Image (cartoon, rainbow, N blue to C red; front, side, top):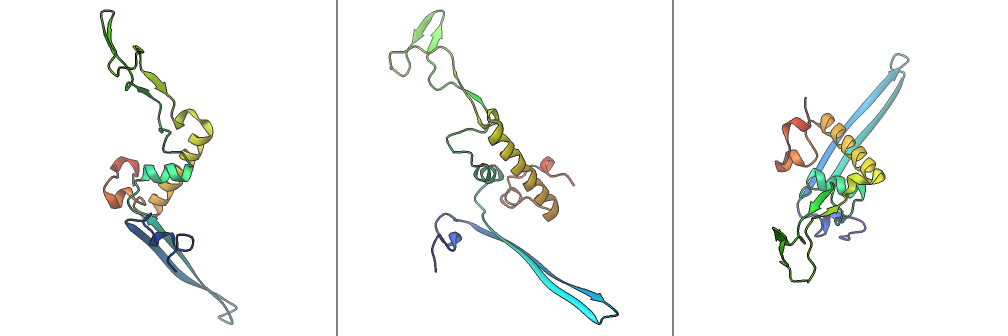
Amino acid sequence: MKTSHHIPYFTKDYTYEGNIAAAGDFSFHFNHDKTVLSGEYGLSMTIDQTFSDTLLLRNISKIPDSLSLYSYADWSGVDYCYQNECVDINGDGIIISAPEFVEGAIQNDTLWAKYTSAKNKMNEFAKTLGFALNDDINGYQKEEEYPD
């Protein structure tokens, strides 16, 4: 049963699969061991290890690839001007002397709140597990992000 619907990590989408599993059991004894309540619990998570934490957070927060996280100045269409003499570098017939300001996800309160919430949850998981979900494993982690 290798279908992306039932088992998505068997498809090309998971080029470097990772799995984290934890389990345990418990027993509660009552009335001098006349009543014993027992149970088991477990947690298993499969993830794509090729994603950095930033890519995971973008996917969790549903920030499209076309939208940058942060705002920036796009200088790609700016033509060269010096002492009121301009050269149309890209040859489109339009002289652009200033960069275009591109708003990022940080400007969208709803998207940024989702991103921040997901980041805080991942930080809590990292504190609980003792390592970040992906960045520690792949070597992207910065030490100051997850202090002891």
